[in-house]
Length: 421
Image (cartoon, rainbow, N blue to C red; front, side, top):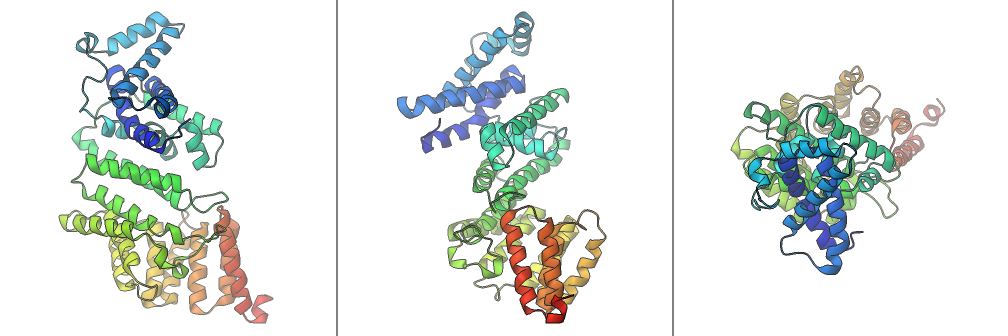
């Protein structure tokens, strides 16, 4: 059991480097991943008591390699498997080079690209990334996603099998594919962050462990790709969004909407870091969706009050974002900005175009946004109906309770004849 936070942080930092070193040397991603997990468990038990070894990375590689070879030898098809390992090991490596002979070589980026292989569905990419790159245990990932450990274990096993079946090699994609694969990597990291910031389902609004892990991995990715403006944009977006987390819930876990949050509780150090990142990235050209979303988040975070928010600038940024990456979610957010700039009816008119989109027609966020705009227009009866419809579809309990509360408040303000309708 890991009890020392410094040891835990070190193990999570080293996990992808160790796995990358083993996979590069032996192949067999699935077997190497299991071996690394065992090495991490041994280290977590020994290091807090015995102290961290002088070369922790080499220590983990050596233990992981021994675990891997022990496993290979114990299989019934011992001879065949040993031959496979032998054939997969370059002769130069077999002639005495220790497992940690290249201490400065870091295969972590290659590993991250492998975990986000296009053969995997997004949930599998997320699970495999958290396990192999993040160093989280299967139980930790299952807890974060509110699924049984056995379910998550099966998901991870299937992901590893899919990678193997796809014949994926442990190598960086060719230049022609690298940009597309990097977009998948960024998407996976953002999915992890979003699930932590606004849990899809369950009894709590947020899962901070996931948000923290996504930020940690994105910081690490930026160290590997310091000149990529979209990587910087994604990190800025996460920091600027996560800065509001302390004010998003009350002591009992109830949701506090943006307009009602105590902005003195926002994390100013994260806001300053996020603003600095996006300010440096935007002038470098090739503005992408994460930079634009970070710019929007910065406008929100720098406003002293909701009333002081520069909504025309936010609307302009959403309009540009919709041109760069059109999606129902972007249009939905633009409708809110349109409502603030041109009035709630203009926002409602824009929502009518989304109601016909099957990707959004039955989504509770569409109904919640409509309810908000109806409330702003003074149609409290209509707002109450929309809030209750949104609550019926929401799967996160604090969000559902918030929507029901808003419905009740609007019913109290609606004319009695409308309430009875």
